[in-house]
Amino acid sequence: MCVLACLMSSCGNNPNPEVHKPTAAFEDFTAYLDTAGYLSDTSRTQKLLADEVEDALVFHSGKSVFFIQAPEHQLILRNKENWGANKQVDYAAFEKAVFISVYYYYGKDRKIVVEDGVIEEWQFRAAGEAKKALHEFNKIKDLVYFNTDSFSFQSKNRLYIFHTRAAAFNETLEQFYTTFRKRI
Image (cartoon, rainbow, N blue to C red; front, top):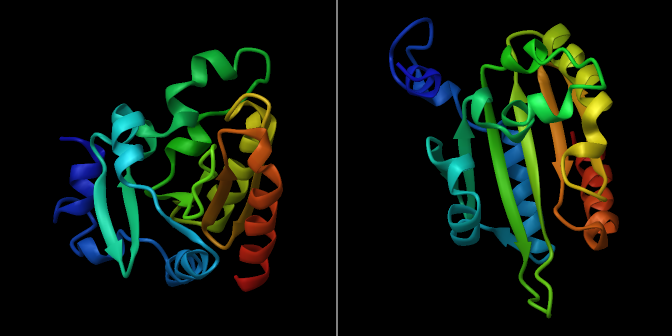
């Protein structure tokens, strides 16, 4: 049985599927992004990242849409052979995540280029596991998307990763990261 199917059903030690959703702080932040001119990006996400969200469950919170995923569907673990060769990354640290809530967003003010990004909330069973995953992520954070920044931090048993597909959006991404850290 797929790990994600197990997470969202009554198998194992997870009888309550409500446990597997974004934290209230993450939900509140995406509502804040909406007031700042950014929306959930579901149509482009499902079209362009079909393999990444294929087995994801969709969780709605107000206007925000989150994709709830098992760790093996995330970019980090799907690219471990390519990324970890020279960096000695312990990918087992990421595999300890219970589930990941992913929020894709884009700017409402559509110009020639659509500003977008991704925020991931990795939930672990213990703070030490999240801390280890952050340590390992910092070894490869420059590889998430070519020529862009990514920002990450740990809060309790959660790891947060902010990234975007274009360097032109780094400044906005850093502002979101800084604002979220202050709010949490």
